[in-house]
Image 1: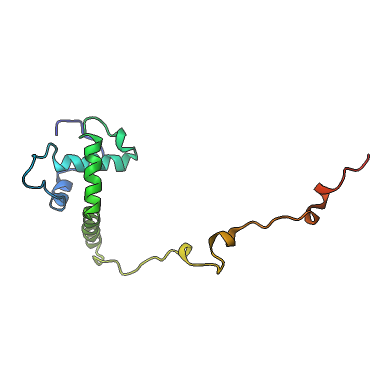
Image 2 (image 1 turned 30 degrees about the horizontal axis):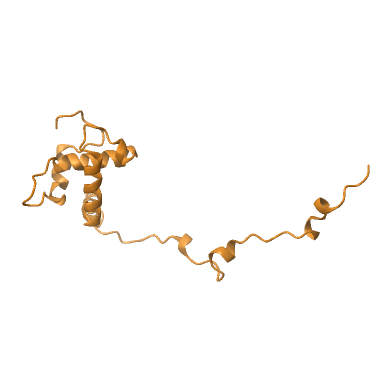
Length: 141
């Protein structure tokens, strides 16, 4: 690595742990210009800093390249595999079962009315009779 280290960069031990889960360059064709580790470091930088892809510092590979890898790996399920593997390891280190034994259900997604969305949230119209003060003629003082 010929650039300054960012806080989001992987340590050597972290990279060794996930390197086998990151797809290697495809055989044939043009050789890869950037290491897989540098691509992952750039993706983690964007995720940690919360910046846009275009705001990626210039000492990383071009933002278009990093973005392309991120979306291809997302479509291939690489991030899900990585998360599942690391979650299992963390749970084991904590002395727990690799797979969670409980789940949380979101009560916000449960139906609360037969009417459905718009009809259930429509605001009632106010009648003139209910607001007689604002509709009355001004009194003479």
